[in-house]
Length: 151
Image (cartoon, rainbow, N blue to C red; front, top):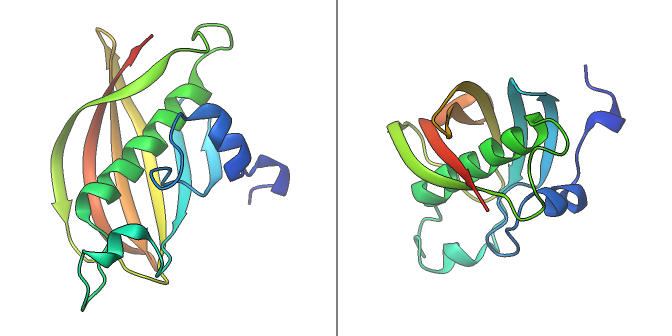
């Protein structure tokens, strides 16, 4: 079980990721094993701006935003896993690819999206992660996320 001091809140996340409202899609980091894995949380609220158009009569979180949330969690894992001083303050993880994507179940208002990401490999500055998103312990989306670090 994680100690409350291990949880990373949104204020700390904002120091690690460049994203801001309405595009910061990680509300909290629940668990991190440095350089190995991360578990993050996205609370899906009925007043998210994307629900106005996706879809007005049946609110569903867009799959591309679930993938973006997984990519942001992967960026956090990469940032938290690198030895201090190896990245400059201007370094960013950029999404360069998404492989093996599967959408299994929709996510919508009131759901808590739990995102699990594990580091797979680093080759020629391409970071590969395995990511899964769950609602109520049921798999919603899975993918392999590819990122690179640039200044």
